[in-house]
Every structure is written in structure tokens, then in C-alpha cells.
Length: 488
Image 1 (cartoon, helix red, strand yellow):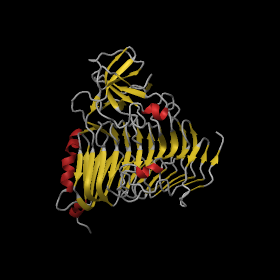
Image 2: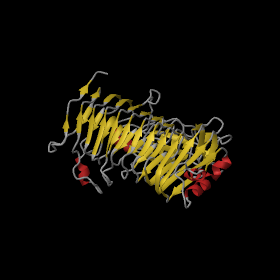
Image 3: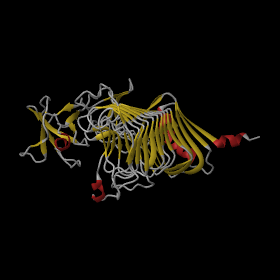
Image 4: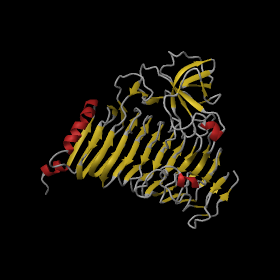
């Protein structure tokens, strides 16, 4: 018979039923974990209600508890970033706490009437043709322009709007030229304006990070049934870095109107994202670095994310032996998935994994032009560095954009990728499958690649548009099998 005192030591329950409980949670959790005789299970139970968190609300670092499981479990709870009262800022998100809805500070996407033109009388100032009402310099003080610029969407402060011209200031180099849309897409740029909301009744989300868990050993970590609404731009809502655990799971959680990227995973093995819902988030939903292994991303739904018109994908995944399966992706500005590593990056373990049985599409309403979309992209985008990546049996359909928006895009001399058994239909402005020739990455500055465009196999795919497949004649490991074109 186990003595009752021993049972108490094995498990600790931290119950949250009020904002006061929630504010006290970090200290209570730290006290439960950093004891001479740590429990086998620490469970955090968050009851129904709305709870406001500050920056790095849970900061769990340097734990050496290989026999302890941490479980954070929600029950009809919504976690919202605190409002510190600092006023308006472009990096903040705004929510209505009565309706639990996000409030968008961005206008609808519009098409510029010209490419950016320098204003020679004012250094660093440019202008574009627009259909916007006049706005003085004083009234434009908190207005920002978000404009497409090839595969990026940089931000510029608006100087004024006068007589159908929008004037803006370039304060730093975003990495692409002002006239990239002309060179690569022969299309006029799209833009949005970020404007200050009417603050009455709105809650400004001024904090970014809810959970930071790094450089720790645990028996397991689980977060489930928790809803997140709104935060500020910054370093990730949830950041797991250097965590060693028997299992790490985020399951059945909801992420909505998040301004930063939602989840970042670094230097860890065995992470699982299961049955989560991501809606209306502005940047990426999950980023898995190349120093991770055995990541599993299954059964999730990603709807209406990537709202900022940047090249941040919904899911970016590298590392060894990952699996991305049975997910649904709908509406995004650049890519649903980015796989592999850039040719300038070190591929720590040799990126390998399987992407299968996913559905990726864009809704009819999202595809109305002008679209909130960048050029030169792919619903599934594959970078150069891969050890063995398999993209199979996915359904990709109804993808549109201004120019060069592919179904599956293997870019920059992609290596060691098998693309097989996919159905790719109704890709309106790009190749259904594009495995492009790019031998020059071998000689580019800082490249880590010595044999681009090798080790690739493309077979048994069904498509209804055009495909472009390059195979090196001097590479016996690459080949193109039978792929079937069907009538739309």
C-alpha cells in the first residue's frame, strides 16, 4: 500500500480560475518545479474565461527534470496578450474582448497605378499612383504602406497622399529592389495601408511571447485545449528551444489573430503538433529549424493565415525524419509549406521527411484580384538542401496570384527530392510542378551546395496545366517517370 503522503508528492495540480490565479501561475509553477524532490506530474488546469498574459508569462528555462511531466490543459479558456497602455503601434494587434474577435487595422489589398517613382526633391521619398483620399503630412504620421516587392512585402512610413499620389519614405533596404515587380513579374505592385483604429472599446495586444521553454530536460511536455487570441509582433508566441523530453505535444489548441509567428521549434527532437486550428494569423504558424529531428505535424487546419503579404510560409520545416500529413491549408500570401534549407545554410542533420495526404488550396473569395499575394512562390516550396524529402499523394488545387504562383515549386537547384502521386489542378498563374534548373547556386557567395539539381525523382503525378522539370544528364540518381496530364 502506498502512503497518501507519497501520492501527494507524485502529482501537483495548479488550478487557474481567475486573473489573479493566472498572474500568480509563473511563481507557483516555478515553485512546484524547482524543489529538492520534484513531482512526477505538474498539471496546470486553466478554467473557462479570458486571461491576459504579459511578456514571457511562462519562462521555463534550465530545468533538469527528466522524470517530470508538465501538462497545461485548458477548458474553454482564451489567452490574450496584455495591453500596457502604450498607445497605437503598427506592431500591435487589436481585439474586441466582448466578442473575442480580432480587429484588422489593414485596408483591403489594392493595386498600385504605377511602380515606385523617386521624388528627386526629397531624398529617400518615393511615390506611387493610387486611388486614396488626400492626407496631409500631419494626418499621415501613423500611416504605413505595406507593398509587394518581388518575394517580400516591406513596410514604409507614409509621408502624405495628394492628388492621386501616395508618398512614402524608404528608411532601410528591405533586400529587394523597388522595381522588382517589373523585372520579375511584369505586374504592378499590390499594397495595403495600416491605419490607426478607433481605440474606444478595443484591447491593444502589446505583449508577444506567452511561453519560452529552453535548455531543459523533462519527462514530457503537453499543452492542449488552449485558445490564443492576439499578440504583438516579436519573437514568437511559443518558443521551444533546446528541450529534451520523452514527448512534446501541442494538441487541440486554437491560434487566432496572432501578429508574430505562432510557434518556433529549435534544437529538439520528437515535437508533435496535432489537431490544432490556425485562423487569421498574420505571419507563420509553425517554424521547425534544421537542428530538429522526428517532428510530426498531423491533422491540423490552417485557414486564412499569412495575412501580412510577406514570404513567411504557414509551416516551415527542415531537420531529419519529419512527417507532415493529413493537414488542410486554405488561403495564404506566399506558401503553405516551405521544406528544406537555403543553399547558404548548414543542413545540420540532413533534411529528410515525408509530406503526404495534405490538401492545399485558395478559396474563391481569396482569389479575387488584386490578391493579397506575392509573386514567384509555390503552395509547396522546396529549398535547395535536402538529404531525402518525399512529397507524395497531396491534393493541391485552385492556386492563383499575380505571377509565377506554382503548385509545387522546387527552387534554387533543389536536391534529393521525390515528388510522386500528387494531384495538382487549376494552378492559374504558374506551373503545376516546377523543378527548375539552377546550377549557378554552386558558385554563389556563401553557398553550401556542391551538386545542385541532383537526386530528384518526379513520377505518377496528375496535373492539368503546365509542368517544368529539369533533370541533369550527368546525374544517374535523377529521373522523370510517367506523369499524367488531364483535362480540367
